[in-house]
Length: 430
Image (cartoon, rainbow, N blue to C red; front, side, top):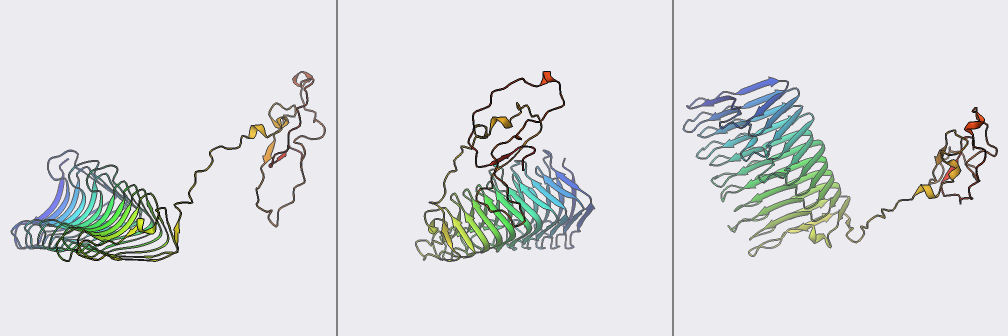
């Protein structure tokens, strides 16, 4: 609660580095009013560079509830980098309205560049409920890059109203460019519940950076998005390499320019994939509010969508003062909007089709088993051909080692039942 490990400079010399080697580390603000976390910074006025923050954990790093790990500059010197090597990393805002996470920034009034944020996780990175991984600039210095490498990555907004995700941005007071975001995942990447991976420019001077995502299995769902946006400059470019890409329930991939300043053109979106599925209002866009639209280029073996036309999924529109962009799809377009049907929920009631002599009330109390039909599947080359079966019990009842009192004297034979498609075998039948 309010704990801090930091290094800083107030003069011409550089700030020191902060280095931690441990098994696990928890950074939790726990309601404290002051900074809680690890930091290195160059303060306002001095020309010295900020130091770096380097964490090496053999297990898990957890940053939550307003905890921070940061490197920043408020002066002429550049900010340091934030580097994490760990097995797992959890960044959980826990609904806190302020910043929770890892960041490197060039503060307001500084001229130095922001540092980079570099994360390497051998297992899982989770960013949720207001957690952030960010590099930004508020002044003349460029923002740093964000580079993430993990086996699995989950970005989950969890209903948090603010930003949740991974980001590099130029803020409204900035006079320089945003950094690039590069995400490489070895297995599964999921962005959901309004979580976001983005590069953004809110400045009239600085451009948004480049955004690159590489993952074998990429799923965006329930408002999850991968976006590059610019207020008054050109939108950044988005490049995605994913073997299997699913866009579900209003998710989006986009590069957009919203400004009315000349040159505020849409960026480009490039997707390389084997299979792409876009359902329930999900879109891929490269548009400009006022000027030239961007370009969308898709390379895939299969592209499935449920919109009435492909234009309902892919859009590269321009504004009043510019032309529309271009959409290039090198994949079979498969419109499944008219092919989806609800399955019949009524299942077969087996009780009405099985001979009652096979039930537990049989005088032959040995175990039984059922062999269900194989449908239209043929027998394998090494399988025996079964003989027809007309009944489920042996021809003659088998005497059991029990007293006469335990055996019913007589029981009426049940009415014949039509043989179902599945074969029914008794214990001794072949």
